[in-house]
Structures are given as structure tokens and as C-alpha cells.
Image 1 (cartoon, helix red, strand yellow):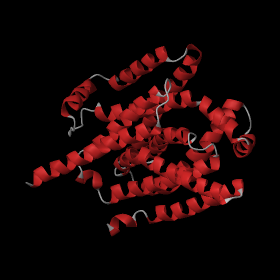
Image 2 (cartoon, one colour):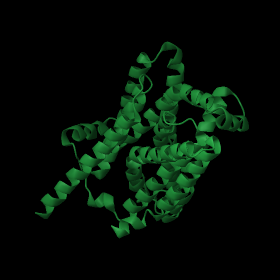
Image 3 (cartoon, helix red, strand yellow):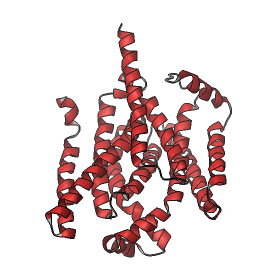
Image 4 (cartoon, one colour):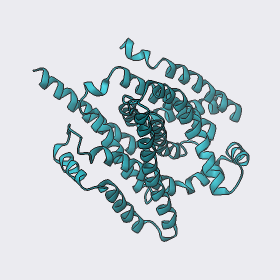
Length: 345
């Protein structure tokens, strides 16, 4: 227990500082204890929301990190967390407002500080495009894992065996994702179809572009006589993956508060716990100890991608997303424990 808590020491420090900052921010806005406590509670809820939605992200990160060069592992766990907290939780929402409202970054920041309701309205208007991009990217991530001839371990055997057989058809995962895109394009309101298709195709091209870049860089390493292990390409892949995971949390946060700075504090605290979980999974080799944990994470990603597509048509509470994602991981962990006991017996 003590060894496990060792990995979360910086997350605890950031939690204390972040919640103190949230309390001070509430006092600055309201000038009374009630508002300060409200900001404190909302910051705590946002952190818990981010952790529950991103646990599968930590598992996938750990799976990728174990194949990366130590130098790029350290860079991801240092630079990556800065990009995750400041880039996705602050810069990304501002960038959406800059593009949607055709205003400058400074004006967008002032809008977030002085007119948070208008800022939230603009973010909400871009939700369809965000969901289409993120849903497409995450679905490709999940299907690329399951549709793989080299995959040897199956959890839900009947389904995974069928998906593995599909790997003999080149580009099968792309065809499946395009089929899903076409189905939802037929259901999306006519005036938003162009936005949906543009964002969905952008998500697909982003995934393929990151994969191509990773292969090119790995091949260059091999030519130079260096073992072809994950470097900048893998780093970029993990950053885009983190961005796709973050879409749901950032948009869902506006259901609790319109204050950009409070959202950044709460989601930033959650991001630190995801980083700590990633380090623990890599250093303690947890994925090798629990046979099906990785499967549960990728099923969770597949479900999240479908939810993001569904969110282009209906509102789905973040609680549903968190419960479904955590449920798959919990079941996979339970199945892994049963398998370990059977092997021991």
C-alpha cells in the first residue's frame, strides 16, 4: 500500500494546491465563504470526473510507454503532462472559441473571464464537431487493437476471434469506421452534416497521419542502427490520444461550471492522477500481472467512441460514460484475478 501511494505523492501535492486555488478563486469571484466552498466542491467533482473518464487512458498510455525509449518515456511524463494540463484543458477550449467566434486569443480569454455563459455557449456549439473527431479517432484506436493477426490473448473469445479474422482484409478497421460515420451522417440534421463529415474525416486522417509518422521515424532509427522503438512518433500518438480522451471531460465540465479557470484546475488535478497511474502501471508491470486489463481498457475506448458519436444526436450524461468505462475495466480486472487463481491452482 505504501509503495503504491509513493507514485501519487505529486498528485496529492497538486490536489492540495489546486483545491486551495479553487477556494481562493471562488472567494475572488463571490467575496464570501459560500461561493468559495462551491468552487472548492466543483473543483473536487471535476477532478473525480476526469479520473473516472481517463483510467482507461492511463492503461493505454502504459501499454505504449513500455515499448518506448527511456528518453521519450521521460519526455512524455514531463512535457506530456504540461501539454495535457495547459494545452488540452486551457488552450484547446480557447482555440475552439477563437475559431468559432472569429476573435483573437486575448479576446477569447477575456470572454472566458468576463462572460463565461457566452463562452460556454460557443463551446457547446462546437460540440458536434468535437464529438465526431474524437469518436472517429478513438474508434480507430480500439479497432486497430482488436483487428490484429498478431494478437494472441482473447478475453471475450467469440467476438475477439471474429475481429482478429478480419485482419486478413486490409483496411477492414477503416471500412468499419467509415460505415459508422455514414450511419450517423444520415441521422445528423441536414444543416450540420458538413461539419460532422469534415470533423470525422479529420479524425480518421489524424490517426492515419500519426501512424505513418511513427512508422517513418521508426524506420529511420532502424537505418541508423538503433532499435526501432517508440520515439517522437509514439509521443505524438499518445498526445493525440490524450486529446481525444479529454474532449469528453472538457465538454462535460461545462455542465458543472462555465468558469474556464475552475475547469482547468479540476481537470488538471485529474490529469496528474492519470500520470501517476501511468507511471505505476509501467514500473510495476501491472499489465503483465493482469492478463485482461488491457482488453478492458480498449473495450472502454470502443464504448467511449460510440458514446461520442451518439452525443452528436443526444445528450448522454458523463456519469454514464464513466460507469461504462470503469465497468469494463473492473470486469477485466476481475477476470484477470480469476485467471491468475486458476493458473496458481
